[in-house]
Image (cartoon, rainbow, N blue to C red; front, top):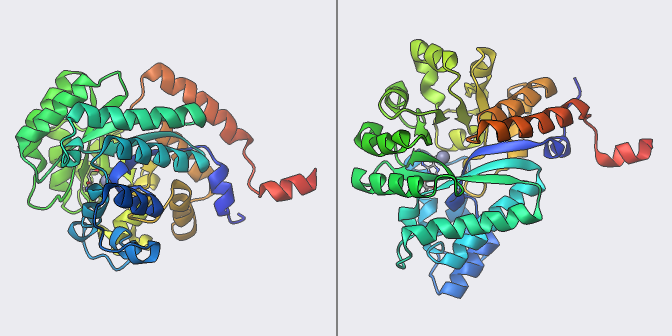
Length: 355
Ligand SMILES: O=c1[nH]cnc2c1ncn2[C@H]1C[C@H](O)[C@@H](CO)O1
Ligand SMILES: [Zn+2]
């Protein structure tokens, strides 16, 4: 089986179902926004700022990983900055042929300069809509409650999700430090979202054990699980997740950085896939993790031996797991399956030479 190149993986149509807006900026944009807004950054050059916003392999935990967001959030407090960063994220994704992306963030973290929660959602939807008009990409938004912030705030964010249902917001999530901040505290917010027939996903089993995944599914009604790495520790729950086709949003490189796994070779995505679970491949944070969807596929191709046929299947599972209405999902899936069938590896240059 010949090795797939990064260009091959970039050409494949893909999804990104787990990507944080506030972890996926371009470094030059942070510098420009800081200058415009007179915000003080820890450094004022690309190379100076990089270690503060890209965590690298030396990162020791999720809590350390999350420090990068103090920097990004400092320049994401205006309407214009949210439009711009949302547009640029979708542009970057479209350029590697991501055809469907669900962008997540927590509006409560963008109120330092007094923006209303509605304006914060509107701004991101505006940026994404601009990109949809320019590129071949569809997007949706997932709003995040934060584990360490009060359940009352999660409830307000759940109400915000309901207010924007069918207007671009497609789901609700719970993010942030996992250890010591159980999901069950936020179950009323998930109840609110579920009662309104809205999809939800929770970060779980990333920095805490399978009990956290159990709570996410059975107390909060998760339709998908963010990461879910530690599902490997509970075979019974794993069977349940498999039987109910609950998708896992795997983010391999991020998991190595937060030490959810020790090294890539240990990542359970290979085992999950072999056992038939519905697994999807995602970036988590394009800037903080310094990755792209194509790069994540390259890593699992090279280090976990996923071949082209398996990668195609992972891609299809990504589209199947989208929080899209069924009719739209079927149409998108049909288009993608057709492209995947016709796909042949090999660079465009070598193809042109053959002609
Ligand atoms: O991988 C993650 N796990 C838990 N929380 C995360 C992760 N990546 C980003 N976040 C947090 C930091 C952001 O400020 C917040 C909303 O996007 O979500
Ligand atoms: Zn995440």
